[in-house]
Each structure stands twice: as structure tokens, then as C-alpha cells.
Image 1: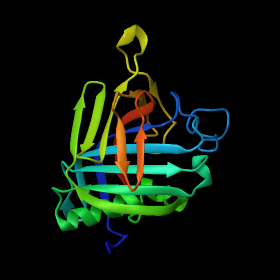
Image 2: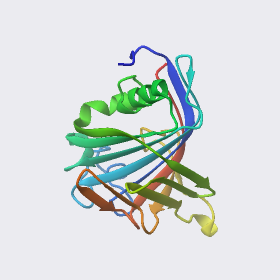
Image 3: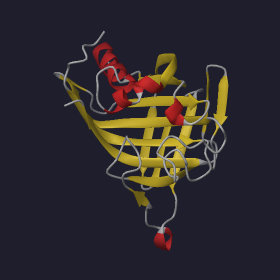
Length: 210
């Protein structure tokens, strides 16, 4: 077990693709955040993370990738989430332990605020993860498991990003609105999602537990 008092920080990029119609009422509705019902009843969301620069104690996390999925049977704020974590196979054992501690919330920081909502941990797997970022497109691929990709929705003139601040705990300073590309799927643990054409977001992230 990695000690929760270990100081850590990371800076990088994240994106997500859920099964809500654009735009996600969990974040954008007259009701308090995470209390509105997802547009499909249940929320099925996949996340991709890339760490440009990170440290956990004296160890580096630079260049590593993480995948995460979550499913809620109703409004996200009501809890009972089922989650699964995917850790970069290029990481050393100490790095894997650090990533698992950070992204499950055990080491404090952003994910610790969501940890009480988790009801079932489906598992944590060490897998090859490929990350791509180009312009307004983000993608993450885990062979035979996850192929998620989003593209920013067109803003003014068809080119500008549509940016929103104060909307998401992962990036409260701002995130871009996006949509899942065709073939944006996840299949594991006896479930399969196809979130093509569904809601997405992406943003730079800067997390720490200090």
C-alpha cells in the first residue's frame, strides 16, 4: 500500500466520452451539479489521461497514461458507481502503485472527492495504452478493450473551441466541449459501450494533494 501522505503533483491532459446526448446534464442543468438524471438513465463514461509532468514523492510519472471507466445507475451524485482502472504497462511497479493511489483517490487530491461515490471496483489492469493529442482531437486506445476518441465541437466560425469554466471537478478552470467520434467504444467486464456521437469534454489538468 502506498502511503497516503506522500506528496504528489501532475500536469497533463484529460478527456472523456460518456453516453449522454450533448450536453451532459450531470454538469449542465438548472439542478445542482451531479444531481440531474443522465440522458440515458444510467451514466457510462470513459476517461483518458496523459501525464506530461508528474512526481509522486521522489519518483517521476512523466509520459505515462491512464484509462478509467465509470458507470452509475442514476444521477452521479447518488453514488453506487462501478469503476475500473487501466494502468500504463510502461510504468514500473512503484509508478503503478503511485498511479493507482492517485486515480483511486487513496492518495488524496481531486479523485479523493469522488471516492465516496464508488460502490464497486471492477478491477485495475496493467495494459498497453496509446494516447494521441492533435488539435481539437484526443484519443486513447487499449487493444481489445478501449478505443475512445473525441473531437471539439465547432465554435464561432467553425474553428473556435467552446470553453466552459466552473463546470467539472477535473478542470474547474475550464474545459472544451467535444463529441465522441465514430467507433468510440469500450468493452470489458461483461459490458460494452458505444458512445459514438455522444457527449465529450477535454482539458488540461493540474492536480496535486498539497
